[in-house]
Image (tube, helix red, strand yellow):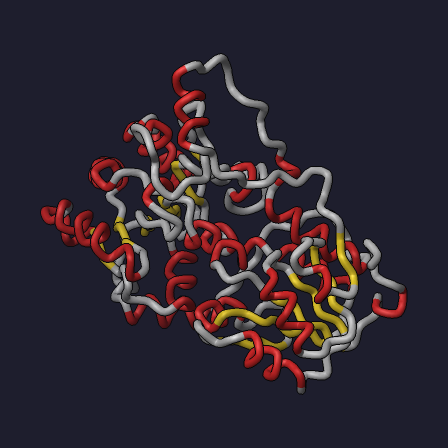
Length: 379
């Protein structure tokens, strides 16, 4: 195997891109997909994606065809589904063994992805890891306790070049794509915006619309406390007379209900849509928001890719690795505490949750108000 593909596949006719399984990761692939389209303008580019994410790619300028698979569908079924596509090249964005096996079973003659010992056999061309890559290593409990008991200064900062966007971009440069980063990009049509407004009764709202997404799929270590979201929502509503829209999936219904109940005296200024929207409706509604207050989550990435600024308390994860938008985008506020054990990349905090509790209500409130004022021409 070689680190670069032969010249015979630098002008493919039909390309299959195997996309990631998670919403935020999928959004972070869009710069790479746009660069792929740029370097192969006449190629037919199909995206293989879980059915839960298929709607994300509707009308995306980099994609000609969406091929989806259901949860629980095995690799043999997926491989068979792809066999009739006539693809001459597969670009495998995830690092999983399964994603490489799928395109191998499909009989696609050229298959490119990052080199990993357990899957190299299924790829025809492997790409060595980037020198700038930083692995998201989960800290042990012992390491966390040591860091918090004998803190002697901050650890070396993760460079912006380590961001996940660059991982995907580097992979498409194997096809001679432009390596320069682009902002993640999603799109919704004006007709979708108007339909969403009417369906959820927002066409009559004269107040600025602010979004709030208090959940996070990965685990509680990524979630700023509910009581702090409540305090911020109350204070910001008082200061700005905004209209809050709550977002979330099935696992966020409880916390969204808590926030809605706690703001019971302000029911005319809050709409709870947790578990009430399709993915396309979520995209439209996030586009309508002047600002989104959110944890590190899929909706965070979607909002930023639609041009909506976000304010995000970061705790167990790293904004340098998976922050929203293009690294360094000043429209967003990514807030961190000085916890020496952060980022730990754990699902649950094994000590006192200081990474999140160290981010104050006032700090978040100020950030949201400032970001909303800066973007007051939108929404």
